[in-house]
Each structure stands twice: as C-alpha cells, then as structure tokens.
Image 1 (cartoon, rainbow over the protein chains, first blue to last red):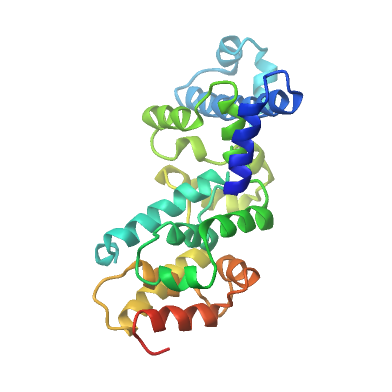
Image 2 (cartoon, rainbow over the protein chains, first blue to last red):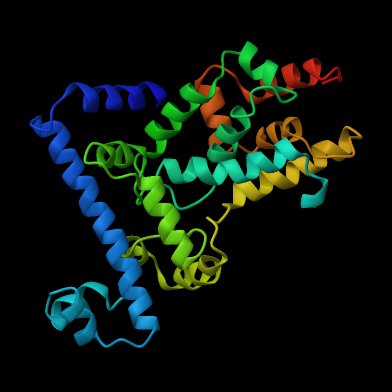
Length: 73
Length: 200
C-alpha cells in the first residue's frame, strides 16, 4: 500500500487540477465525506428532537427527501 | 488483563484500530493486529518476521487486496481529499471532539440497512463504546497471546506474545496473509521462539 500511497501522492503533485483522474477522484471522496457528515448531523438532530421538516429546511431539501434518506437509521 | 500488557503491546492494540480506519474498515480483525504488530519495528520477535521477508507494506497491500475497500473513507479517499486541500485526519479529529471518539468511523447507513435485525441489535450495543469492535478471531488471538505469555512463563504480555497469538492453527486472516507471503504460521512460530531463545 505504501507504494500505492506514494504513487497517489506523486500523481497529485505531478498533475494539475485539470487532470480528470485526480479531480474526479477528489469529487468522489468529497461525496463520501459529505454523506458521512450528513448521517452524523441528521442522527444528532433527531436525537435532539428535531423534526424531519426542520432538518430538511436546514439541509435545503424537502422533509420528504431527508426522511426517505435517513428514516431507517 | 490489560494491565499486564507492555507499553508496546498496548500500542499494538490501539494501533490496530488506526490500521482498520486507514483501510476504511469498521472492525478490528487479526489482519489489523498483524499490521500493528509489524509497526513495532524493534520489539522482540520482529527480527524473525523481517528475516522471513515480512514487512508492514507488503502485508498492508495484501490485506487491501483480499478485503478490498471498506465502507468508510480509506487512505485513497484521504489522498484524494488532500488534492482539494482537505485534511481528513483533521475532519476526523474535529468530529470526534464534538461527537466522541470513534464517531466519524461508525458504519454509515448503507451498511446498517444491509444488516439483518439480529446483528443490528448487537451493533447497537457496541456502537456507543466509541471504538471499532474487535472481531471474534481477533479476540481469540488476544486470548491466545495471553496463554502464550503464561506458557512461556513471562510475567508481562509483549508484542512477541501478540504475534504468537495471531498464529492460530485454526486459521485467520493474519495467518492467510503471512502464508501468502511465504511464511506459514508454524515457520514463523519456530523462528520467533528461536529468536527469543526458547525451544519451539
């Protein structure tokens, strides 16, 4: 993995942000990070008694959308 | 039991969690314990592994290959985020500051949805501990290492005992990794014991 890691670092250093491989990979990782943080924050808000409507409003989505995505948790 | 661990052995148990996180795994298995053991370069018994050509990098690559990317954000994501100026370790640190240790690395909903009802309840119990749960074979390896220390007449549990404990004849992922790298468990065991000046 260390080889893989240093390769990744080299790729990042060598390539400009115009390299789609680097840019798209970063977008994919960002999406994962956003999902993780959203799950944490929605869980926390529910524990604190926030309604789906309030959560949806804070996330700028409809309460139906946020409920559909997170109700199972 | 934990009080009898040497300083280095404790670092292995904690380090196994870091190894799991870096691979995006939500559990601690024998594979992560092995990687953490290999991180203790100068500990007793390590020379045997090095002599057999076993090192942390080759093991990590193999674990990554065998298990594949986990559900969580792994080192690949970490590198990708770095290219847009985000330090994942810092994000993790801040999340844990607010939500407690391990909060960032709890399983995401996708994983939880797939889980069946009886395992969901079990995980509900282990989640609040803030640490990644140890898998049964990893627990067994820890128990085995305690027995190794007792059998060898050593008063404290060191990294060498953790390594011996991982070499389970019933098999586990650590054994598989070592085997694939050309070091079957009985060979490793004999070499470690020989290096420690004990009879195999």
